[in-house]
Length: 178
Image 1 (cartoon, rainbow, N blue to C red):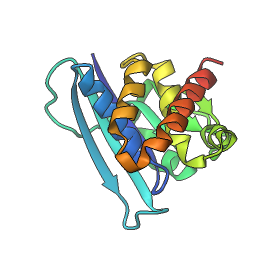
Image 2 (image 1 turned 90 degrees about the vertical axis):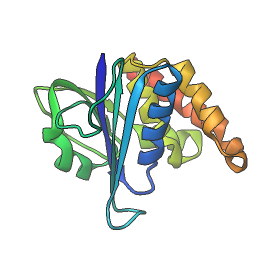
Image 3 (image 1 turned 120 degrees about the vertical axis):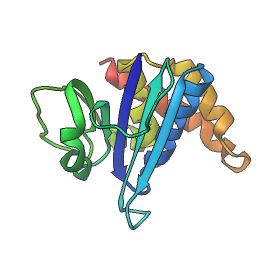
């Protein structure tokens, strides 16, 4: 099994953290992992994306030509990465910020990540909503392992945010399961 994921959005949306949580969780599940971040010229508000590969065998390169999954957190991400998802791949759209995108050759999951996060009281957890949706659709790594990773990865000064991040993860999974 090999899963290639591109996560894209803008700086400040937690794109890198989302990729790190996936990578850390997969490592804890004894998978081979690569995580390759890419930032735009500006950090906040500029383009940001990362590539994560999870595999049962060693990974030769962190570069992804065609992704199995694209998690797009804003409209510019679709414009930039829509041709990098393979046929019959999974496209997770933050439907709070992306409207009316249809591509016939991919499986589209529209998840109102930002709206769900705002309902929880913190729009910065939209990335964890997207993670929950991804983990509900693709069973590459278990949700409980991601919850453990979130808890253990949180720096001491951010421990208070663990609970809302885990709640966001759970709400994203519910959203994906309809």
